[in-house]
Length: 287
Image (cartoon, rainbow, N blue to C red):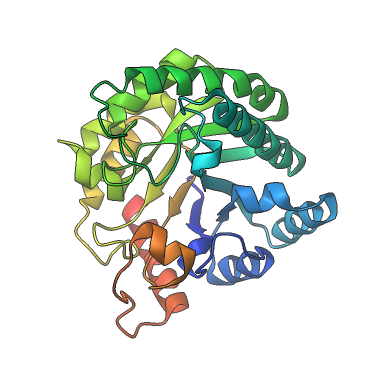
């Protein structure tokens, strides 16, 4: 049975916030998992990480971690100093998550986010090779601490290196670590893939984490994602990992700016009520 989770930024408007209130909120709504900001956890001291870990355990909630690396930590950058800073930051995150008991760190951990292809670049292979080399550097640490690194496939308007399942599969195979896999998201799949189901099936055992959300960034059940196709594909590959919803509906703050939420998508609806309804919808779809 898949754990069903939600990303804290559904409620938050900034990336670095106190995660403890979202543990209780997610647990109260009946979720099995909360996804938090990996950088926020890495910046906590040992006591802060212990408090977050213990609160989640007390509420019966699993934790996962997500981040989009900023430009100063771009592990695909041409500048070796920037790559070194990114590798060091990823290692700090891996150690912090290892201290939390391990688990999934997903997102744009292979370059910068949001990022466009640099002007004049026609071949992204050199950037991919630098990124792969960086992930190979940090993979042994992840293996030793029980941390799974999931490179997220995102649409062309947010990043340029990994836009399709096929690209991510090739990337993960080149890194060649059991702790480096790929992460798919229905929002991005809808934009880039010829077939959502086929993209999931192609990932097969390399699929380490799965995000869900509607075409319009609303919670599951409020859009037109072909959920029967998604569920059938997940069942075909016997995917047993977490399924985390990642809706973004609020204007303002760092989250609204970076996700480009330019209008209030709540339509007067209560956020908690919508999350509870999306959880029920997801469980029914999976059943």
